[in-house]
Image 1 (cartoon, one colour):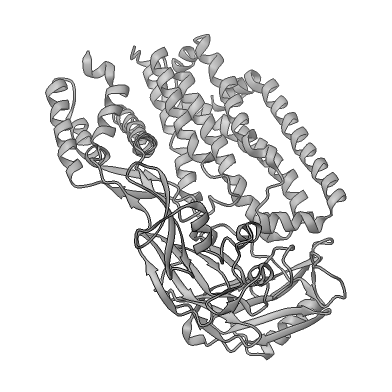
Image 2 (cartoon, rainbow over the protein chains, first blue to last red; image 1 turned 45 degrees about the vertical axis):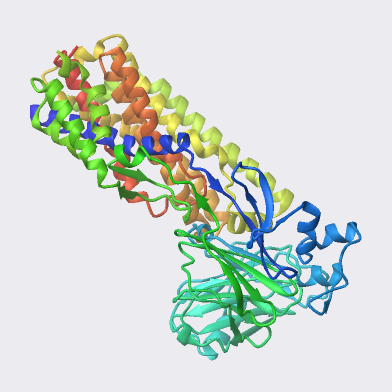
Length: 409
Length: 222
């Protein structure tokens, strides 16, 4: 019984150490805020370089380009006419053309493009039910459909109100998918569930052989097409969008990390001229205008921006490491031998993450164990000393608080 | 002896248990009636849309109910025992203290499982009638951590109640609050779906702590 008491007592101590390994680095992180210089960076069609908001040495906000030339606010607006066109129009300073292309507020609004995909959007719990908005209904605007589809073992439409499978509609779509060559299960389904989008681009379904199928509800009839997207690129993820000019169905990401635009209506893939990246760990943001696309890739130690030509998406410029981190002595690297966390910036799932600290923290842990031995050698045992040696400050605090009476008696 | 102890615990806690049962039925019924009213107002299609595409959760009241039930039950079982020092009498029964504690905890677990089962049955039938099984499963993943929190809260409150030293009681209360925080870390519905195995183990480890408090009480570690 005494042994059981000891085992359960040490269970409490281990749980307390576990909680300290979770809470203490978190708390320390809130106190020790690392200074960073944030940037807003955008490619200038006038100076043909990146222009940015940043801080100077004194911490004041300044506007400059990559060459170091500084600008006032009005000058900054003028070198970014494809971004600040509304302000320039208000100031009567909007140029009539840029790089030989005539511009107006209407043209720039129609050609503006924004896309954002965060790794937290990918690594997030989802309910595998998808709406398919009907098109060519004779009505202006989209209305939320009265059913959703699922694709588990079989393709099925579920009528929402009676909460029952619509067998006829399900059979119509499923038989057409099989006729077009769909095999096995759906490994990825993509759609845009936003009912406020300007139009519906349907849903894309990827089968086990990486063939990509496009389905739409056209005036109440099933439209099913096997796209020309090659199975060799191994489609990993598709984001369906509805941009103003109707040139693209959306974006495609393959297993290798390349990013493509899916052209409409041909399904031709246009590769964005940027390095491959991992959508499970990194985020992508695109600000596009009439002439250039600014593509930001952040996360996993990278903060990069690429300027691509809007005509062919070829890279014309790039800038790496946008965020500057001020290096300073970090106490955390010495005192925390390991840390536990349950959330990350790249995922909405809760999961256990264990990370060892820097090697130098081992010396502090050993020092604390020797100190513990020196102070309490008559009352402590080898398990306590080993615990402090392995867990450092977490073990020391736990033992001092929970075994205080036994240690000092 | 086991039956007698169970009966003793029932006599001690029956009013609280009946109150908790009625409260659970009342809250569950209220949530259902409220949601039915919303279904009528905005339509089921819109409700499915906000659940599936905007990750909305329609049983917001459910968040802290299982924990509250666990805490109240533990207090009704062990607070009175400790405050009137009755537990010391129980610990001197011709029964191993570990067996006694096991019986007392088992009683609490049976009551908790029964109360949670009633609530899950009521809500489960409602969900099954109005939503696809994908949504029902998603909601199961969402609420499971809260029910595990209820089991964990019962164990931790029992542990704190039985601790004989006041200062240590305070420290263990802080420890318990920190321990419970894990269950409410991420508010996104379904966020714990990959984590339930670990969370289940994490929820039931504190049941071993109760034995430590009981042994400290019996063998007078003061």
